[in-house]
Image (cartoon, rainbow, N blue to C red):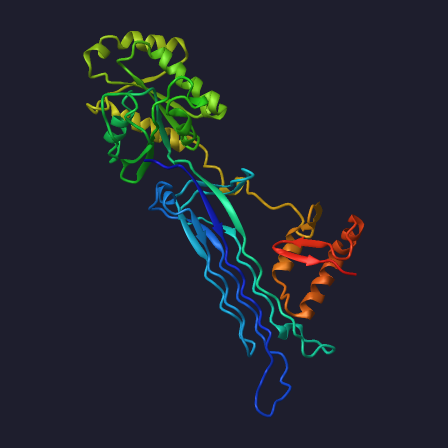
Length: 420
C-alpha cells in the first residue's frame, strides 16, 4: 500500500547538566570550583535516502528521540555531546508543522538534509560562574530542555512525466512497456491503487522518469473515487501524457473531464505541456473509427494525437521522442531555495501572564527554558533566576497583575510561591 502522508513525533536531546564541584587535592585546601559544562543534546535531522520511495516505514515507528548530552564532571570535564539523530525520508518529502500546517522545508534532491530540532545546549558548570567577588560559587545550570515537535510528512512523487487518464485507459500497461516497472494490470477499473514509477532509457545517455497516476473520475478534485489523494502527485511532473481509451464511447468527453479535474484541483496543472495519445489502436473496433475520433478532437483544439498500442508496443518510439524533445525545451526546475521555509517569528523573550484559579501562570519561551535550567536546590541559582525575572520584566508584570505574597506562580513544570 502506498503511503504518502505520515505523522511523526520528534524530540531533540536534552543538554547535559553543568556540575557543581570544588577541587579537592592534598595540600590544596581551597582549590576552587572545577565543575565542568554539560554536553549538547543531539539534533534531529531529516535526510533524503535515494533507496526509499514511500513513507511506509513510518507506519510502524512514529516517535523519534535523540540522545541527551552527558552531564559535566569534576576537573572541568565537559560532558559528551550527543550525535545527531538522522531520519531517512524519500526524495520529494515536504515537512509541515502538524498543528499550524506551515511548511518547515522541502527535501527534493538526494543528499538533502533538514535540521528539524536543535539539541538543548549543555548547562554551565560552577567554574564558569567564578568571579573576583564570588570565588566559590555554588551555582550551575541544568541542560537546556529538548525541543519536541509533531510533524506531518507529505510525499509528492518526483517524475518527469505523469501519465493521466480515465480508469482502465491502459496507463499501467504503457508504463510497463516503456520502463522496467511492473505495476498490477487487470481488465477492471481502478487496477492501480497507488502511483507507480518507472525509468525509461530513451537514449544511451537519456533517461526519463514516468509516473502512472491512478485513474481520475468526475469529482476527483472533491475527493470522489481515488483521484483526490493522487492529484497532488501530478503537481511535480513536468509533462503530462493524456492517455485516451480508444474503446470509449466518447473520447472527447473523457478528455474534457480529465482536464476539468486538473484545473479544479490546481489551475497550474493545465499549463503543463500535454501530449495526447489514443491507446488500443490494435483493436479492430478502435482502428475502424480513428479518423472520426481524430476529427472530433481537432474540433476542441487538440492539434496532434499519437496513435499507439501499449500492449502491442505500436508507435511508442515517436511518443517517447516527443517527450524527450519537450523536456529539453522546458526551463530548469525551480531552485529548491525558492521553496518557502517556516521560521519562528516570535521573540523568545516575550511572555504572557494568565490568572488561573490556583494562581498565576507565566508562559514564554525564554523564561520556561530558564526555569528548566535552574538548580532549585542551590540558593545562588534561585537568586540568579530572580534576576532573570527582573531582567525580562516578569517581576513587575506579576505585581501589576495583582500577585500577593503566598500566591502560587506556575512557570513551565514548576510551582513557585511568591514572596516579597
